[in-house]
Length: 395
Image (cartoon, rainbow, N blue to C red; front, side, top):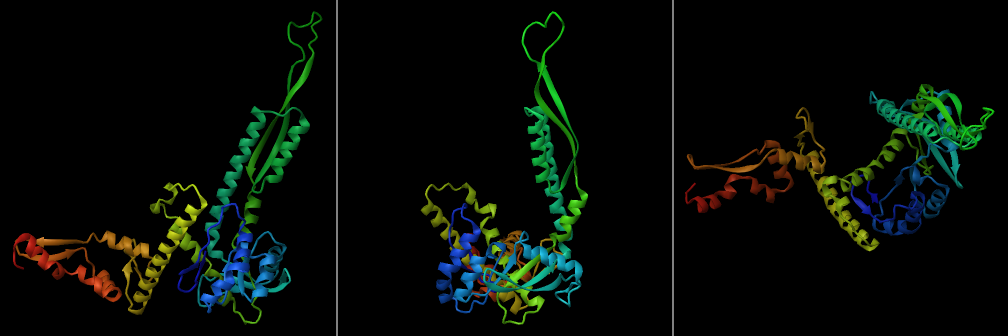
């Protein structure tokens, strides 16, 4: 899916098998679909994507079609490691000078991806340190439990010989990123070579049955610390060398990539119960995805209109904790706010009066500015004739 970074409206959707590599599907989009997309949306400036967009073939194809790309460079590439090393030698500076907790940035010069020259920017978002540390700790704990299970298996299901046992242990050691295996011992399991009674001379022939492995495994705090050191860093690359970017400009463009994740979050919402639908043929799956994409387009357009109206008229609604006011809520948040108001039409027979309970001033202002024709349904006078007809009273 492609979405406009400014209005956040989805503009292109294509259904693919989960077995298709992202690099290939992104290349196909650039090679085949982009001419049709740019024909309809002529003001598109940049194609922004995650690290799957950063391949030699995509950059070369983008150059042929005049596409400007902003993407993240995969952490495993040599280019990224060189940028991380450069950060240890040079001073990084705040990207947004007016923000106290601004991420740090460092220009890392130019390099080539494929045959194309690209400009590199290293970002260190230190405010994500606590979140990233929790993620790494979870990975480390999962790895620890996995290694413990495999070592336990080497005791309950031992290898035939010590050579095989050592090979299995070495394989485990190589896979360990956050753990250390120590105090490795190999215990021979001996059994009688023959069945039946022991020999009269008392000598028992024995043979090696298997080899058990015993070892301790602990978390490698130094490896965790080293992983955390670079976890908050990432490198952004762009093939637009003509524009005189500031670090804030380039980072702001890249951050619009998160729009796609937010759109997919809406489609993956459990309340839609898509996972409960079984479809047999690919064409039925594609039809479902097209239906969901059209619904997402309408949903995004409504959210855009709500936010635009609220910003222009300085309108707000309370946040879920009712401690702050939100001027740019999501559409889901607005629906939840209206639901929590518990709107209902109340007729008081003693005084022969009508009123709508739960209707807040914030909600009424928003409705009046957003959909004046709908706002009338939230006024008691609109139901006056209905109450008079049902209850046989005159209000």
